[in-house]
Amino acid sequence: MGYRIAIVGATGNVGREMLNILDERQFPVNEIVALASRKSQGTEISFGDKTLKTKDLEQFDFAGWDIALFAIGSEATKVHAPRAAKAGCVVIDNSSLYRYDNDVPLIVPEVNPQAIHGYDKKNIIANPNCSTAQMVVALKPLHDRATIKRVVVSTYQSVSGAGKDGIDELWDQTKSIYNPTDSKPPRQFTKQIAFNVIPHIDVFMDSGETKEEWKMVVETKKIVDPKIKVTATCVRVPVFVGHCEAINIEFEDHLDEDEARDILREAPGIMVVDKREDGGYVTPIECVGDFATYISRIRQDSTIDNGLNLWCVSDNLRKGAALNAVQIAELLGREVLKKG
Ligand code: 2RA
Image (cartoon, rainbow, N blue to C red; front, side):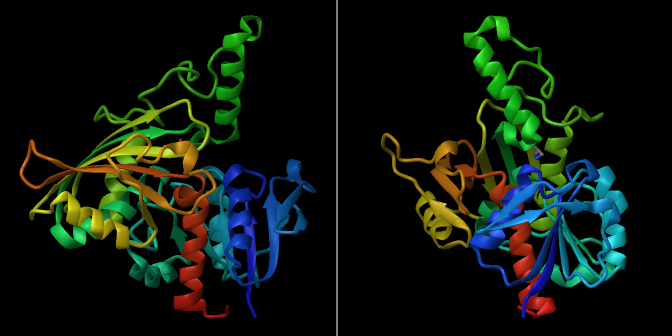
């Protein structure tokens, strides 16, 4: 028994990570196919100890396949996700295309697993934005205990959030700092990212927020609770993989830092590393390749009633994308398809 799985966008960072995680978590795969653009056709991609050769997405027929994990841009998703869904293959989509559609569940399995039962309206399930996923994993157990009124979050997002081009740009610029003759102008980012930080991810909106900041607001409300007020500042930093967030939370009820720490220690998907000493906290290079959402620097915010600060770190290619998508597939299998 097992599932027939299609990986759509298999040659990208997230596509490759989904294959790695399906293997690491021994997802019950009966058959798997790696799909990519025609120009990438035949590219060899690892799946555990096997090697898959990518097939042309344009020509692929999804009929008879159980689950398609999508990690391609919104434009291509708009073409292929509906036809996969119509063919009876459940789509789990990493793009932002369906996240805000009332007929499509937006799921972080540790937070709102019950939403899986709404998948059949369009046969599509949306994966949240990477910066949202790790934050709501931390918010949910605290919200259940003390009801969150307001969240103020500043993010420190790695360049891999902008794909392979983002990684290449940081690498090239860093090298050219030491070899000026090799200097290249910013391409992927609006300003130099090497030895710099950029308070701008995605496009600016009329409100003055960037779309990345807007996503964190809207998606947190959809996944956790529409009553929660969220304000975000999303910043690109010269780190290859691993998003960090400084999160300030105001609760309805009192919650002291020790109880918050105990709650987070017991919460699904979370590792607490929180000692008030040198190195007693997590940094992005320590989270790479891991499944956990790490929480450090848990402390009262004494400037408001019922306030708490914390530091949240997670591998943006994993919990922020590939791992969450595979966890949704696991949830779908357990709760709905039941073929595993
Ligand atoms: C980023 N969250 O970090 C966005 C898209 N992955 O660039």
